[in-house]
Length: 95
Image 1 (cartoon, rainbow, N blue to C red):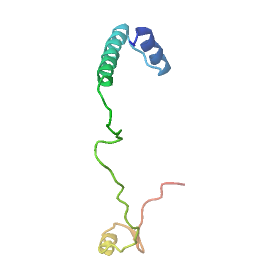
Image 2: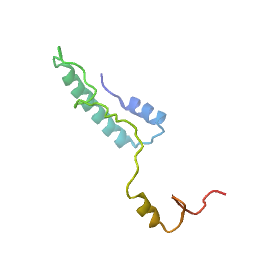
Image 3: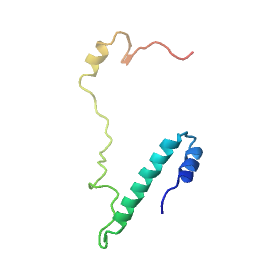
Image 4: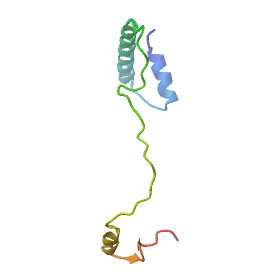
């Protein structure tokens, strides 16, 4: 199966891309090289090889959600240019 210049033109139009004739010809060559490489990969015997979704084993690192106090919060709020109680005071941006 080979990609033709007409197929490149059609896909480019669907994607609303404009290519010159030279660019389309270059894309045809590049896409056909990719397809030939895929054919080479398809010749490999993958019997007994389990499919993978990632090359490294991944696991979610879920931790317990626990509220804790930040020891330097008072110092940080004290250093704020403007504050109101325990909050930073910032200029109003929405009318």
